[in-house]
Image (cartoon, rainbow, N blue to C red; front, side, top):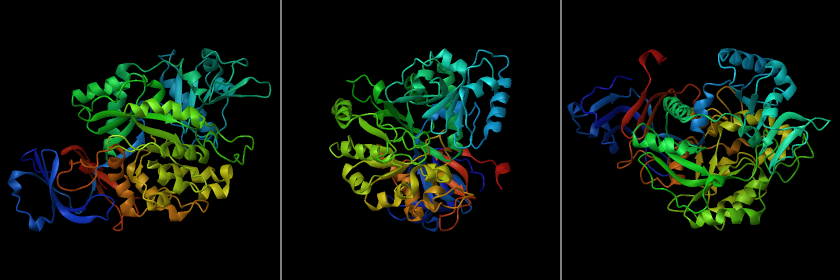
Length: 531
């Protein structure tokens, strides 16, 4: 791709491209030229039919590259992800690999002996951990290793002691403190029990949160993302709003506040330029990796476990009633079939608010007749195709073939007229939207084959997968009149990609060349990086 010719930064013309134009859920109308003026798309069509003067705009010759509406991530944790870029990532590591990673990281902090040791992406099916082992690896240090799904952690005895967790500590409501045969805590905390350790871990400072946000923003922009949904943590909303006022946000951020952190009476605050918060997040269950996703039938590998359902229906209705009355949208975490059904029951009597859809997050295992229930709820399905890449390796023995066939049912949801948006849940999984697209279409990762346990027919057609990553996000957050497609009048949020197969099904060799946000080129791959 040739360098842009800088003439007028308020006008940008992309030419000689393969432009995925059109709107809604329709198949694309292909173009090779588009014009951006003052941050919006003003023309889309054939270069042969335009009269634009090359001297009046910044011209980018795309050399045949694919231009998509700006890719979006409907579920990630930006500030947390930014922090995890600086701590050990244990993905794919066995016990020896985990031990080496923890020791190496601790050694790099030798001048800061008071710092706790934190790591992420522990995969318990590859590596068993307990408090005694972590104490042996790093004696006297407070070590906390979070599981891949962030719903569990393993702590050293020093960390447990710092949190006051001993054999007399009762399980908190909605949480589990695992114990050995002598009823002594073995270091593993699940669901609400992780809060016991989080309460005593040193919180990040405002400066650390800001650096993490900006570090993560640069990272995901380089991956082609232009908009996200973000979970707010203590102190982060004020930082986001200040960054927005200072024009330092380069992506659109639709944020969620945990319902337990809401004051119970306020209405959603006014939108900023790129930051808005009008949604409350709540959890109905846990996760499959921790066996805390709420299931009707037991987990096959641990027959006395059916997961954790956090509320009765009456408790749930009372919890959300004041939020709905004040105009908040809901984003409801529901992974197991029992939780998904409960979410559908709740939302069937709760229409969307202010053009926004309520949404059910993850939707990994549908109950019997779950597609019909979901369609009647009126909610958007917020899915993470990238999760299937890992889950297909270990989930079948845990839930069995029949429930696997009811898992990750994306095509059935779409065919039922349900609006779908997808994301990654980073740092739980990779935030790479190209990998996510590949998984949505092919039901596997770049170097994998799909598992026979999961219905291959539930993959999405390529153009629908792209619409889900763009238009679907905009529909869910109530912004489809402003962004999500390449049509005149829409915000010029664009992702330029090379290496995609002609039929848009194979993204294994794809790479992001350019990310454009509101008409501004916020990322451009250097010539030296191109293959």
